[in-house]
Amino acid sequence: MSHGKGDGRRVLVIGASGQVGRQLIRELGRQSPAVDLVAASRSDPDPSRQVDLSRPETLERLISDVAPDHVILTAAATNVAWCETHPVESRAMNVQAPASAARAARRAGASLTFISTDYVFDGASGPYAEDAATNPINEYGTQKLDAESEVLAADSGNLVIRTCQVFGDDPRRTNFVIRVADQLRARERVEA
Image (cartoon, helix red, strand yellow):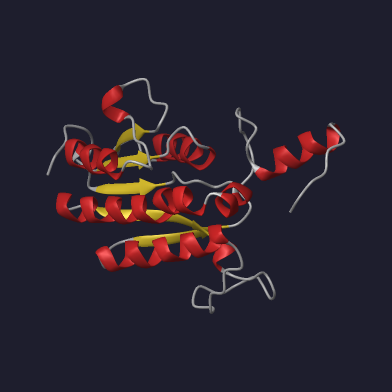
């Protein structure tokens, strides 16, 4: 299936305005100019590229409309404390949305890469091997582990990548490292 650019590989990045998504778009664009990159996020100015993880139908519509060869899902509710206090809302975003995206990707004939976390482990004896036993100790880790299962069950060509403490350029100042620095500067209590 050709999409009119390069070798016809169309990659849809969902969560392109987030920290991982922004960097991924930069790197893929720089290193793979033959790839037709389509960026989508909750804040995209183009309504056809807007997605809302709390509304799975927006993911399904987007994947169907874009007809990608591959989907990379970087979007998630990543504030661990918020997930603890909002388990129903965060589960919709962190489990149900990835499951919907994986099913929509399969229907579109696309594979999906899901960005997960090392929070699926308990932190007692890392670094962890790919096949290490999981043991999440909070709601966020449990949700991401459940989402991994949904994504992998949807298609054997899907991939899960577990990240650890993502930090770097973040204009919204929401990543953990920047949040801690801001809280320390303000002489606020830091919970970790």
